[in-house]
Length: 196
Image 1 (cartoon, rainbow, N blue to C red):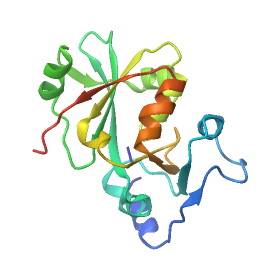
Image 2: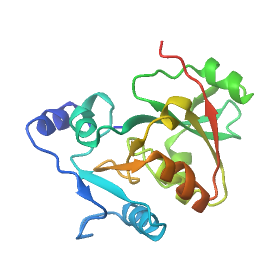
Image 3: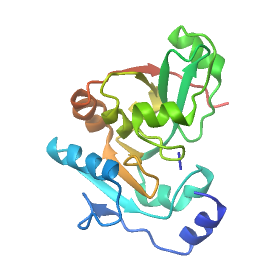
Image 4: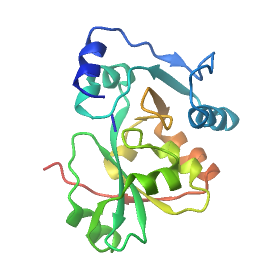
């Protein structure tokens, strides 16, 4: 998910630049971010990157959204069942709301709730505010099931973080849900969410 209000005000006054590919200098970047670029490059997946102050809420990221357009910007929610035995990464369009009953019935699960940051770190090597499909590369034992809103799949491009919320990527949807997921050995289940 996408900074706080002060970050938003700062970004409103600055011009974000969309770069082709990985940063030229890895200084100051976390290893988990660089691993994302390494993986995408090794798969021959083209991507564009915008660097920005930490982005933690959807509301604070309109400047990032504009530079990534026409990519669909997603809410990425890390969820679990009541028993905390099954974990899910749900990708929905930013203009949709998560209703647990709506999703639970589609995946035949008990009521879903937000999973704790400790499981997020353990399974995806990410922290709250940086949740992203790219984190599935760190889930080598497939603890997390990917759920994707059908409207996300219909878009040509998707936007996401490279496991850190100080950069955002624009990738072709077909590359993310094709070669990327195949490489990280994950599949996905399509879900339908209402806009209300």
